[in-house]
Image 1 (cartoon, rainbow, N blue to C red):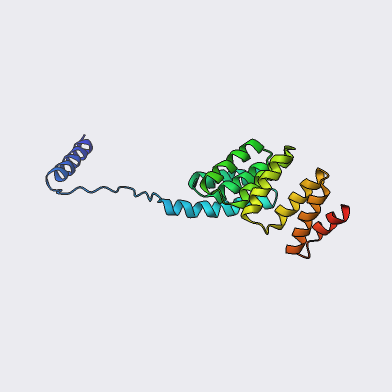
Image 2: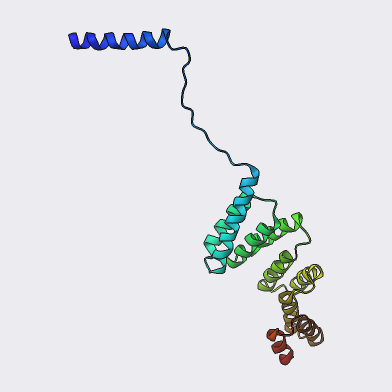
Length: 189
């Protein structure tokens, strides 16, 4: 009983001291650092680099997930939409990739990579005329793109339009005289 009374007395003294003698009561409030837009955009580019490396090394599902994360942090960069489209193409999500390309074109309609990616989707879907249109738009923006020229020459070759195909392959070898793939296809013609 004496022990309980003593405990009560100490509790009452602490309570009275806190009520009458403490002027300012301070609490520890946690600080949260919320990232600003610039930090998020920088992180989106870092994530995009990792997504590209994963795509390059064949980890296509992981690349797709990181590409989506990069887009969620920075929806206004057409390069990120292009990367997302490439990851979607690798995962055979062609309609999703076409939507990503469309969003990228809305941001920057002069980004040739978007048209080249679009053409590769159309080729996979066996839409040769659409692929040619996309390649031509991309080549109008970047006329010295060897891969775009080579692909356009191949499309003409598939249609057995040998004259146009030969002209495009000649153009490619004029730009890059060591481009053996174009020489090889010229030999096929």
